[in-house]
Image (cartoon, rainbow, N blue to C red; front, side, top):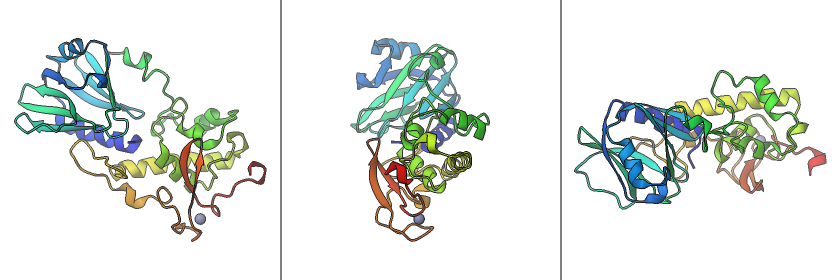
Length: 280
Ligand SMILES: [Zn+2]
């Protein structure tokens, strides 16, 4: 599933591709992608005639800001946006087509069919699901070490599931949580309450640094993720821990282990990220 760096990359490429284009009409080939409004024809009718002002990101969601409407979209497992000429043949997994007045088309393709689109009046989208309950943006200036400590403090969960909970901090998924915990030398099963002030400082820094580097690399292409221009990111070559089970840790040479934490496959170095005795 794309995480913050991948969605940020899609956002940036879409901005370069579709800003200023006017929607002539919309074709919906798979109704389940459209979550709001319930009526697919109403979705298409509402969008017709509107121009793309810019594409923004909130957590792992894309926000297509139009003149007078906002469309919120989540790529889920394998959703993908691409710009095509109208005459190019359609992929059988293309489910929604935004036809622009200049003859180009923004096509939404999704093999797994889990992606979503919600349409809102401006301002409405941030007050309603799915964006309503989203937590702190980790690359925003407001995400300070103090803010992070306030979020973590008093929580009785393990640190990994806490970081994956989008109601606290947004955009971090299974890849970047393992990378950040490894950088901060924190075992993923450590209780949030057990983390010291200096560990939380290290973890805050690790989250921001990991996500920033990944954004700069265009995200990771671990499975089939590509950005809005069909290009793969390159951060998968810089991953230190994720997907490296039984390979030597870059810091200490110990073989990387994989276990299940909070239902998610979890990579860690047993030497760099020791588990506190009380938690074993
Ligand atoms: Zn190590």
